[in-house]
Amino acid sequence: MIARATLRPMSPTLWIGGPMVASMAASVVLAVPVRVAGLQAPEPVFALVPAFAWAIARPAITPPFALVILGLFLDLLWGSPLGHWPLCLLAAYALIFAARRILSGQEFLALWGAYALACAAAELTGLALASLHSGRVPGLTGAGLQFVITAALFPFAWRLIERYEAADARYR
Amino acid sequence: MVAADTVLDARGPFSNSRLADAGADQGVVEGNPVLSEHGLVGRIVGVAPRASRIMLLTDVDSRTPVMIPRTNGRAILSGDGGSAPALAYLRSHDALKVGDRVLTSGDGGVVPRGLAVGTVTKGFDGAWRVALDTDATPIDFVRILLFKDFSQLAAPPSPGVLPSTNTDAPEAAPPVAPPTPASAPKAAKP
Image (cartoon, rainbow over all chains, first blue to last red; front, side):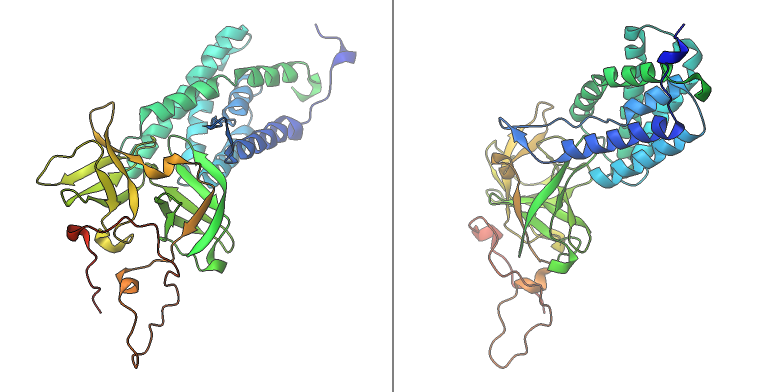
């Protein structure tokens, strides 16, 4: 059991707002058109990190609304039809939320697998929505590449969950 | 024509677009073609006072009428999120060949005829695709062609004729490929 003295307070604002701002900032930075050695930076979906951590650590009424805001921000940043990324993020959140009782307390690798499933759910939702909108199925290579890069971000989600577990119990 | 710098780049599977630092204050409107030094990049799909969004040819929503000068064939360049858009609705009496040049056809009045697009290639999926000329270098600075319809391509008015009230006519020639007899621009209708 974690000693009371080692617990750090975490307000709901910090728990929701911190990851939101961080994922927004990371998305903007990686959208800057800079090439290194002729290669472009990847475009992962940073918003899936808090979507996973919020569903695992502390389900509440606020995270879905935060995900809608994050998704709308991504739509405006990347030029997708409004509502595209909110639905993708909510699909991933819903999947993890439904399996939360199974996933709670699992090991690092098991949670990484669940996180990859959530990323796949978001990408498949995106493929379906883009197909409906444009009348053509987008290339699977791009979606697959974005899935791999986004799935590699799981250590950030793990750190968020750990941060919550080590937080002040009064917030629970 | 307006020069602009692209400041943000979306290159995901569901949207390929860029933000340019020129907008309605510079006369940019939705639908304007966007060019780099190598050819057509895309077109404007959103405008703010000092910024505009460029939908690239590779975007899954992008459809551009193109032509193959060698055969005078027509097709629709259809983006799918990948780096080489596909040629759809191909209409030609002769089959395509790898290496054929692809230019805009101007059909429908979306973009002017004759803008350089790329060369025909065969995709891994067996479909005819286009290797874009603009992939040769990073798309940093672009030129937004203030083009609205064919009426702007008409010959300059002769003396004594009142000029057009449209002030968005391009000031410089875009990077067009040399016209072939089959692709020579037709006179615009009044």
